[in-house]
Image 1 (cartoon, rainbow, N blue to C red):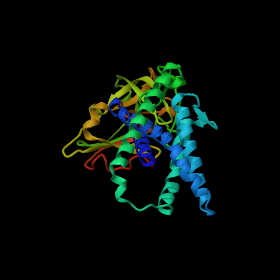
Image 2: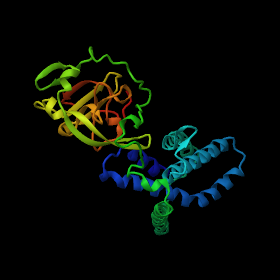
Image 3: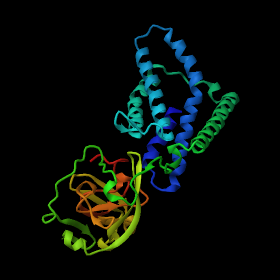
Image 4: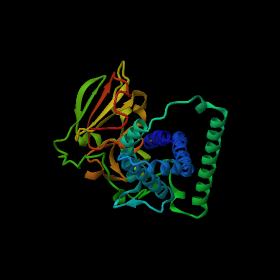
Length: 323
């Protein structure tokens, strides 16, 4: 169940369109299943503590961290605990879950149990079914309680994010992936390099600001907030020629950060020069940033300096950016 909770949690970070809402729901149901399993697991733990093994302290640490990430997740889902020690509650939930991974691997190895024929017995399957039904029921009851009590969590988006500063660009938070700092970009010297079916060329900021396509899109950050904003710029489909054999579109930042999109997404992407009718600020990606509707914030590359069409498939990249 912890494996399912971890897998659906990773997938929840990735979803950006309503079609993927079932993943977030599945993550919540897995969390409820873990809650239901606590009484049974506590009996196993009490038995293990009677044995004088030094490794039991690692097992206790695993238990404490598992409970902490569960409580942090529930606190964030209800809206009662939006931050912990000054950090977004959802990131604390994710960080502690990542710390659990090596401990769970060790625990499975050190406390391994050989598969038995009864593991797939009718009784076992019936118990698993009862657990699944109970988890779905508890999740449904929790969602209804959050809504009925009018808790902040009732207003979350399907990704779990909370609305922040919609149509107020000056108040919208600014976040960057991992260790990216806001670069100092000289607009007079900056150039956008494009490599596509027509060859290689460079465009200035003045040339890009002549385009005024308007798009209203939702930036949904994995830090736990989302914001509706109006963006102005040039569609990548207008700017870039696919050329024969194009499978992906590579977008690169001056910081070294990059992502790849499927080639068929070209027409849905916007290279923005303005937000809310005003030029982008430095922390929001000046001189230009990518707007990728239906995708989470880490796809919205800031400080773009290079765009290429490539024959490499779009999946040929880490599941989450590392640069």
